[in-house]
Length: 116
Image 1 (cartoon, rainbow, N blue to C red):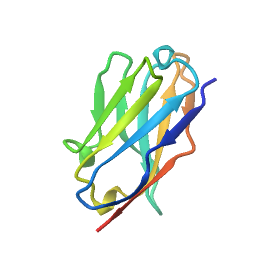
Image 2: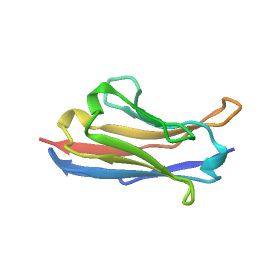
Image 3: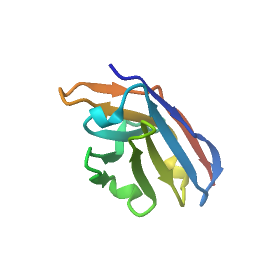
């Protein structure tokens, strides 16, 4: 089992920055891949960025060069640094983790609103 709690969302002007954090209830070193997803109003949930246990990362094309995912195993926390935010980044952002058995865990989400 793993509980994930997101924080750091809020209202920001276009061009601004936010850093999201995802705190896990267990050692993230024992987890496989961790990722951030987002769901905008009227749209399906989509992958934003993922990070593997060795630190390999992947990003949606729409956020490459602007967002950075990182993990701090000592703090059991995964971060999403978001720079140069655009109105189209407005969404609920969800943290996800997958254990080595393939089971997925989700947080409840944090809302990011970018005003233009």
